[in-house]
Length: 305
Ligand SMILES: [Mg+2]
Image 1: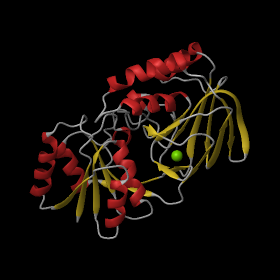
Image 2: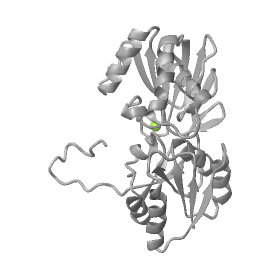
Image 3: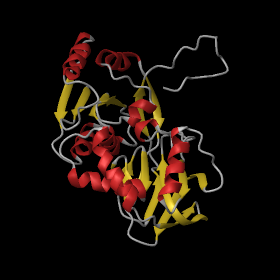
Image 4: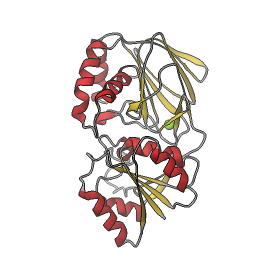
C-alpha cells in the first residue's frame, strides 16, 4: 500500500490542483493510497514509523522539512520515499531530478528506481540535506520568529539583510575525524547533498550515498569577505583554497567562542557546540529512471538541472 503524507502548510512549489491530479493519475494506474495530513512538528516522523512495516511506498507531499521528518521515521527500513517538490526550495527533489508535475510523479511511482541515501545526525537530531553554522543559522532563526504559514524566497530578504549588517562572526574550532581543521572566525556548512538555497552549490562535491558528509568553512570576519564568498558561490567557481576549506568526514565537532545558532534543512537547528555524524542506517529513495544518453556528448555525462 502507498501512504501519502501531506503537509497542508507547504504549498508554494506545486499549485493546489496538483494534488487532485496526482490522486487521479495514481488511480488510473489502479493504485490506492492512504492519506495522512500532518498537524504539527514530528507528526510525519511518527506516522512514517508507524507504517514502515506494512507500506510499499511513502510519498511526501510537502517541502524539505516534511521529507526530512519522514526520513527520520523510515531510516534503516526498505520502504522507499518519493519526495514531491511541494515546498519553497525543494532541494532534495532538485538533487534527485524529481519533476514538479503530478503526472510525471505518478510515472516515477510506476517506473522509477530506488537509490540509497545517507542521513546526518546533529546532537542526536536527524538532518537530511544541509546545515549551516553561524550566519545562515542566524538568518533562519530570525525568519522563524516572524514566520506565519508557508514562506517564499522574499520572506528571507529582511532576515538576510539584518543578519548581514548585524552578525557577529563567531570563532569556530572544528575537529573533523579527530583532526583540528579550522580555528578562526567564520561560518561553516555541512552537507549531505550539494545544493543549497536559490541554486547555490555550497558542498559542491557532496554525494548522498558515500557514507560521508561534506564540510565547507569560509573564513570571514566582516561583510566584505562574505560578499566575496557569496559571489564566488553564485558563479559556482568557489576556489577551494586560501580562506576556504573543504573536507569529507564521518564525525565533526564544532565549538564556538560565543553562543551560535545553526540551521538544519532550513529549520532552526541546535546551538553550538555541535557533534555531527553520519547515521549508520540508510534511507531508500524513489527517483526517476536514469536518463538515456544520446551519443552526442558522451564525455559530458549527465547534465546538471
Ligand atoms: Mg556524502
